[in-house]
Length: 165
Image (cartoon, rainbow, N blue to C red; front, side, top):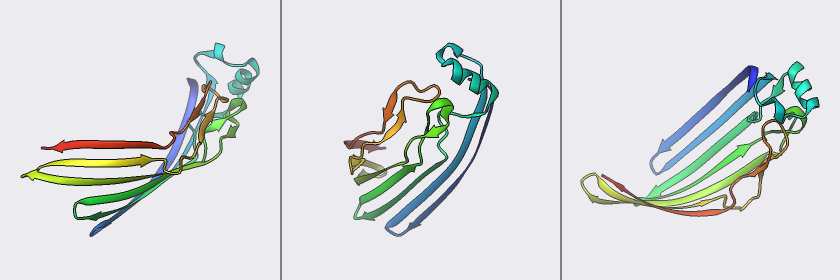
């Protein structure tokens, strides 16, 4: 925690839906900083602690730009969709003065809604997350309050069955 903090940002979102096609786009900007640590001071290197006490530093969740987009097509109760996510990198290094590498990931899904009676239906869905199986590092373990490397999800396969009533 910090004695003083500031967070600013904005988001743009747009969607399109016409016939069997739909699409969306989101873009976000964030700027977050703090100064003068107010808790868990014992966790800090003395040089870093002294620097933060006198300077504004970017917070560990400060990722300046994030974007996502997706497309889908529906045909005979089947829906095929693809979406992607971009992040320009979270903070790292001494007093969060650097940032990790940008990353992007893409996902696909295929789903179908099967009507049973009235408004009741069964929805089946299959998803592949991170279809390119890209290994991407969200955090490298350095920076304020991080302590360990963190990675985004590798390729994953998921199936879902849902009942609407």
